[in-house]
Length: 508
Image (cartoon, rainbow, N blue to C red):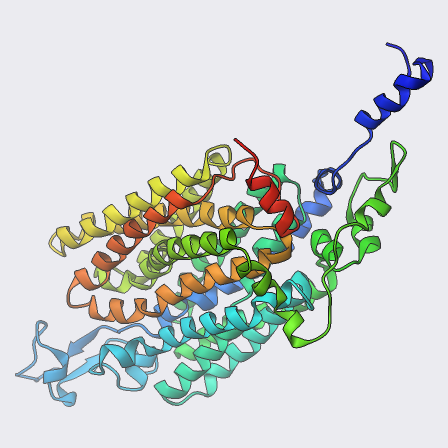
């Protein structure tokens, strides 16, 4: 085959024009294509924040549990089937120490569903408000890395303050603050991971995040069992101290997203992170080309939240946001609600959480094999399957406990798989300029649905229809919004709203 120098001069220019052009997306994808051991370690280091996030999300399974009790010797009016609130306090005792949970320590055994569900509901309310307040800071001034470290560190320090609370009201207020501070962790981890790798590795790194979250959830039964005769406050200390150490390590060794650096006009830093891309490629100055990527302006507080205005200024983006938020409410209610409701199964609470957590491992495996499958059908199948299993839990009742536990596990497995694919789907629907903001807003919707979950779970102790029944109906109904959303499998990430709009308008 003839070289370029041997071609006629009139054809040489034409040939080079076809050979040289690179789009910004092509160059970024090319630079992020390499995935070696250093990239893998970065992936693990970033993802491990989810370990501590999971602990804080589900720690109330043990700290706010309704303990078992027994009748005291000689209490004639007391029996195993008695209603505890109608018995004299002297006729019964807790099976364990009174300081084992918040319910037993503060005498909340006869409190209303509102009071017993308030701490975890306050946690989700804090997550909701925190997602709104902190959402765009990772897209603008702070960046993905700094927002992640700040959120994890402040969450952990505040969590340790739980040992000083003396009543349910102070405890609920503290849970609100913890939820507020941790609200950005999941979003920053997912966005930072997916923006540091090419399209080929996007799904894989997402699975690493889910696996770390699973490990954090699975660690809780072990921690709680070791401290089963200690105060519930001990669990907060055991989960907070390691998270503080992690935050320091992450600040020192985690690197920033190259896509975010480009959007901030920090092209030299971004180019240094794009492996395997020289400054001049086939005669094209790639650094100069990357300078064309529009940088976000810094300055006033209004500019910090400019990504929200940019997002809602376009009708297609607004419609897409509403649809994906509704879907998030349904999937998130089951994903977070089912673990919190394990106490309603009438099963050993340590084994119940272990079995529940183990469902996340096959879910991660299933998610891995779904990488080459379309996103919408995958989410639909597993969401509907989860909803059906939830409804079946109500129909089976407590008579067939083994069947009920199996259905609950199947529902959680399906919800986990749908949730995993759903999070990747969110990333692919929106460009870099608003990606952290949109992911945070969707998580707000998820949290909004979960604000009501603790009350439903508390009411579900008497009738499963208020917990499992509601969960099943909501997740199945939310799937209708998939009809108005596009498919994103195999599509490269965009950086600006204009690029996203242009790509979505292409036929096919």
